[in-house]
Image 1 (tube, helix red, strand yellow):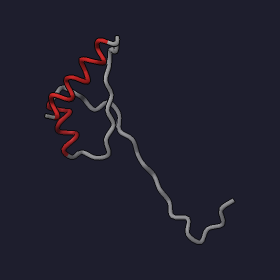
Image 2 (tube, one colour; image 1 turned 30 degrees about the vertical axis):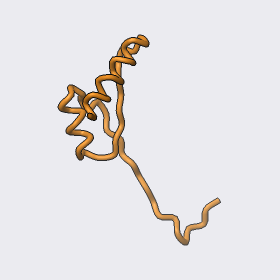
Image 3 (cartoon, one colour; image 1 turned 180 degrees about the horizontal axis):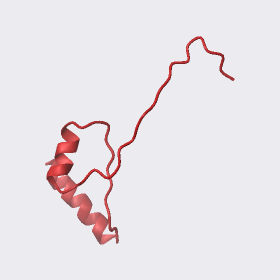
Length: 59
């Protein structure tokens, strides 16, 4: 079912003149495997940084 939805979405993008499809997801889990199986390649990874601010003086 997911493959059918993906291919229909790609075809719709193509008919509207789209040349590329991008997806973002949060981890290397099932989504990564799914898109890899269908020819997608990782082109960029993002670092998400965080810092606790409890007790800090924030302006």
